[in-house]
Length: 513
Image (cartoon, rainbow, N blue to C red; front, side, top):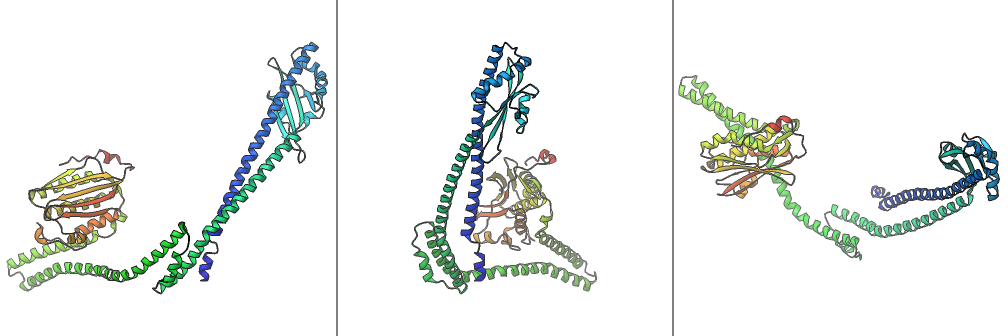
């Protein structure tokens, strides 16, 4: 119980509160930056408008002074009227300014202005651009330094630099910014409290449901269900999603109770499945013991006879060779069921080309039984896999179709690409498979009635190997059969459309038979 409480020490409510707080803090920071940048931009735009007006008025006064004094529109004329510029602008309340030449040297006006401030605006004016810089000498005050080139008839005559006290504008902007921050903070706090309230109201039933679920777990450990607890869940009284969750939870527990009975029935099935593993080993032992017994029997007869009976010797050697070959093939098939494909590199494989190649290779065997193999592949079917292993699957399926198909019929191989998968089917006509046989056909050592096969000696491992290979390629293999009409074995593999096909595979073409 202490461990359970430790688990919920950092519960959903605290997690959601911290997440909500983090979202609000992040949103507040972003909003603060946006508001501050916008108000700063508005302040600069307001100053820019005022300074542009000041620049135009100053240039008008200077032009009038040049005309009244009869001075030339050049630097010398500008120097001559420098004192007059100061006298003309002072009555307008312009005390904090100075007149400079094109090199930034002092000519008249406020003597300290050329060296005050950062001087960035003056450097811009020397390059021919009007500019201003803002400084904050004290809290609640702002000084603006404005430098403008005096340009008459496209000639720069000098520079005039102003120092403007814009504290009133700055204070007004700061008050507006502070008011916006306070209003925003109040709205954020109210929204946070409301969300926290609703989250808490939403999670209270969840906490209750958690406590009830702990009790249910204890009941289930004793293999019993507390019906009173189920009634408590059903009568939660809520008509929202949480109430529906409670009711569904009670129904789920009732279903769990009914499942206890089914578990006992499933237990027998599990035992049966475990027994199938032992059956596999028993079948394997039996299949290997049969050829060994035959080999041992003929070897003992030949040893006792010592070659006196040539017919016995020939027959014994033939049977020994036949049974050893069969046993060798069986061992190879068992090895094929290992996970060796995990060590083999998968490459792009055109399954349609591989299928045509298999059809060409087995058409002679099919013709022996008056059968023919038809293929229908309208497009290349590229998959990622081991071609030799996939070829082995197709050979096995076509070979089985020949063994168990009716004479004078056709075996058809076709394939398509659909919904991101490659589907390939092998169809034949014959006796077919009963539903019970379809369920077991892929089990190791399982064989249908041998009387319906044209060839003997099958170990019943072929289709098991096919399923193993498809499992290695994350594919599936299945069968559909209508007895006496048609049998279809099909495989499905993931289609690879974005593969970089090697150049030699792109040119490789196998014509259909």
